[in-house]
Length: 87
Length: 113
Image (cartoon, rainbow over all chains, first blue to last red; front, side, top):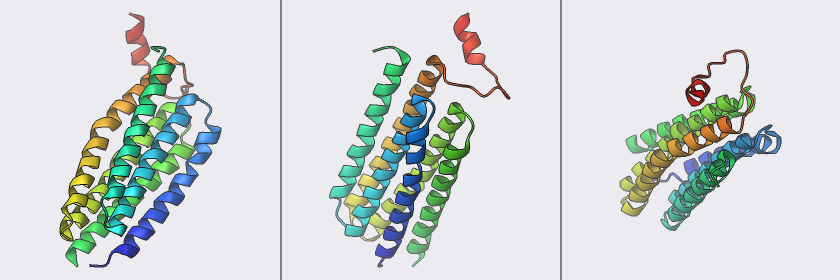
């Protein structure tokens, strides 16, 4: 089963959609708007890495996707706690 | 062939939800409405794509890709509600603008007591 074309098309569509979110990162009137857009971009980059791992049939890139998702989650929680006033 | 149809349908569902979530992120009038659209992107957009990748990995006999995709899906499913909750609480406590048309501020009433 040759599905490499499907992974390429889905990855390119998702990447182009995530570029649109940069508008919200640049413009967002509040800090939380920027954080939300950056978190969404992080998760989408993780998805693209998973798709690339399926394209190459190597599982190394799936680990990279997990690490990117983890770092995005930690950054989101950190900035949220800072905005809340706990730190 | 049937596996390819299933995987492509899952990818189509994921792309549709990511697209609708991004339209919501651009056009919603309020910080809290935009937070709701971001949950739409991550949960309903990310999980079908990861599930399709897991089915592909199990179908071609590469078990590591399937198991790791399921682990990433479980991780996103566990951590995204926590992150959304923390961001919403931070947005409320740092006094983000709330649109005045349909304001229902029960959390502020509970804090004041």
